[in-house]
Image (tube, rainbow over all chains, first blue to last red; front, side):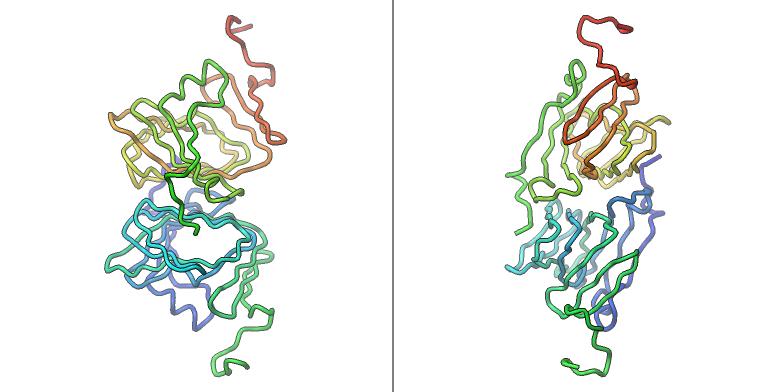
Length: 161
Length: 161
């Protein structure tokens, strides 16, 4: 029966970002609906943002289309050009390769929820707009580096180290 | 600004099905949100079913994953094993290649709405569960035939013609 029992969906919390960026993802959790339903070609996640939480560090994808629909509450879409309020029923689309970083931030005092769909490409590069970081996926592994490919600065290393 | 203005979305009504099956699709209309947002890797449609309308003839896809979330009202998911009520917030996933035909039917007295996402594969075969019809997509063209590949029966032709 392909109707999904959301109470059995894998829940993802925390973050794959290296420190200190991982700490910025507190208050975000995702139900992995596509995985629950056996889909492999695109991911579908139902994401809950507690007040103050964000969907991701602001980023754009080189290879993967992305689509979001807000399903509950209100949040703010932030892009290069500024901020756009998003409420339940509002949708946004982010075609692969458009170099305009985006994320959703919940500045309200209630939880917000959105459905997000993204192609599952075997190779991908995501670029983070506001910090010197990118991530490259090859052979199923994500590798975070600076934008010039060098290793990320580690704790105790200077900004220009 | 990737937030979509749904009032400008291309609207699809009618049906690509050959007669007499096209007439069964009355009461269905779709906002083509993925196309509006410039997405090419998967389609995203916000479909409205008037009372009595159906999403499609019951079918399954050989190549394309599919996902639906009901966003307003109530409808019934019909598959080989039977019927499942679906309400706003309910989701269903249909992995490519699983030979269990599905569709959504609105048996309520109010409009129902659902978001549907499907991979856009260059080649596809969809098989219709309840009638002798399939559709094959090659080179961007959809060709409807019987399941053995012969032309569909035309009006005036006997059932076994």
